[in-house]
Image (cartoon, rainbow, N blue to C red; front, top):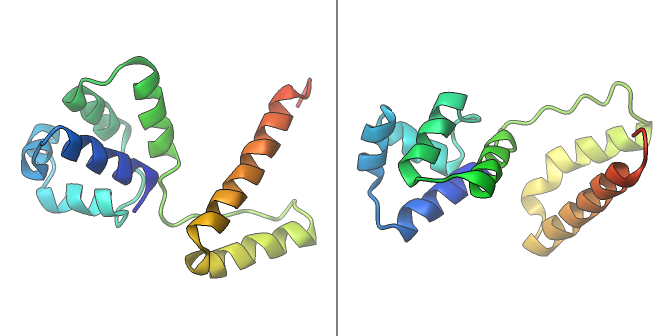
Length: 127
């Protein structure tokens, strides 16, 4: 499941909405929407994201968050390490091979490291 798919499923279930009704509203098949929720489809299109925001009547910060989740929901990720260090390339390759074996706690620890690095870059002038 992708972050976008997980959030859409959560919103739909919290509101007691049926997948087939949402699919009809968005102009897609129930099978496609179900596959999108399960992470078996690629990142949603801008039009589908906008339709989802409208369907759930989402605005402002919540809309920004759902859009950000959609952007981070490509289930088949490619990482270009051609300008990275050999160790960074090793990390990328090992992560690609071993991500399915990580516990939820280990994934959370990796996310915390990435969040910390992103925050540090934001605080650095000219970064």
